Each structure stands twice: as C-alpha cells, then as structure tokens.
Length: 286
Image (cartoon, rainbow, N blue to C red):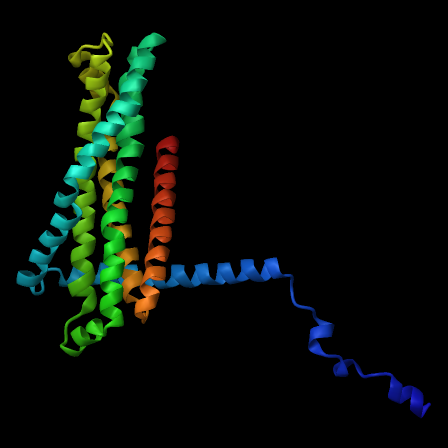
C-alpha cells in the first residue's frame, strides 16, 4: 500500500507544461499581432486626442513662431509637390480618363461621361493618389526627421526649455499637411479633367467642351464638395499624426528610425484606405 500510494503522483505534482500545453504557434502569432494592434490603436488615439487639444487651445500661443512653421510645412507638402502632381495629373488624364471617354463614345454612351469622371476622379482617385504621394514624399521624411531628433535627445532639450513638443513640432505639420492635401487634390482633379478631355479631343471624340462641362456640373452634387474637403483634410491629419506619433511617441535609437518609418507608412495606408471605405459606404447609404 505504501509503495502504491507513493507511486501515484498527486495532481499538483504534474508540471504545468504537461497539464496545460501551450497553444499552437499560429495562435501565438495572431495573439501577439492583436495585442500589438490594440496597443498601437490605444497609443495613436491618445496621441491624436492630445494633438487635437493642443491645436484647439494653443494655436494662437506663440503665433509669431507657429504660424510661420505652418507656412513652411504648406510649402514642403504642397508647393514643392506641384511638379510631380502636374505630371501625375496629365498621365492620369491621358491614360485613364481619355480612354474612358473614347470607349464611351464607341459604345454610344457619351451621356455618362460626367458621371464617370466625377465618380472616378473627384470622389476616389484624386484624394487617394494625392494622399499617397504626400505620404511617400513628406510623411516618411517627417518620421525620419522627428525620429532622429528624438534619438539625439533634441526633443528632451525642447522640454527642458519649457517648449511643448506637440505644439512646436506636431501642430504645424498637421495643419500644413491637411491644407496641402486639400489644395493638391483640387489641383490634381482640375488638371486631370482638362488633360482627359484634351486626349479625347485628339482622338476626334465628338464631345463639345460645353457638353463636357455640362455633364460634369450635372454629375456633381453639393455633398461632393463637402465630402471632398472633409476627406482630404482628414487624410492630411492622419498622415501627419501617424508620422509624428511614430517619430516622437516612443524613445528611439538611430537604428530604429527605419523600422518606425516602415510602420508609419503601413499604418497611414491602412487608415487612409479604411477612411475612404467609410466614405464610400456613406455615399452608398445616402
């Protein structure tokens, strides 16, 4: 009996790894990704709320410093991108819009030209292309610039001098990128519509300029102007906020700046596409 009782182990003597095996590796991977996503959303949301609060309460504080910085970022994200935006507008008009007009004329559906132009260019391609271009040229540079400043201790130096880094580094970028993307989108849409019609005219499509403009005006609704403004401003605010968050929110070493830039680009693309999908659902439901 003693030997038998000694040979039967107690339930609590069983090792934990044998009693409750770890979940499979794919579940561990998915769990880590979900936790990391929740942490990113929490941190980015808090950073966005702080930025919004500082923008509303301190925009006119130190106006002689902040307002020129806004103009600097409008020049960096807007004026300096006009040549590449002009090139993309002409390419988009010639390659896509002009061919669409020619195809509609071939099948006898010229009356839908304005509707297709407004749907494809004004509502979708214009804001998306402009936002992605600004992200590639300005958003990545913002992460590198701020991440390097954080790694070199320059942000801590600003705080030691009593300067709010959000007020000085983030707010001008958010306002500058929001205004720049809105202006660049309007510019891209106008050039694309003009170049598309020019390409159709060179193909001898019998569509007078007056009819073309009348179709565009008939296809545009008042909410298109509101949604275009709201969408482009939000795109700019998202790109600026995410770029500044990845560059400033966490302590970085110089070798981590490239990884932070990659994360910022991926997060910006995901948020921009998600926001655009929400706008599409709104238009379908209205």
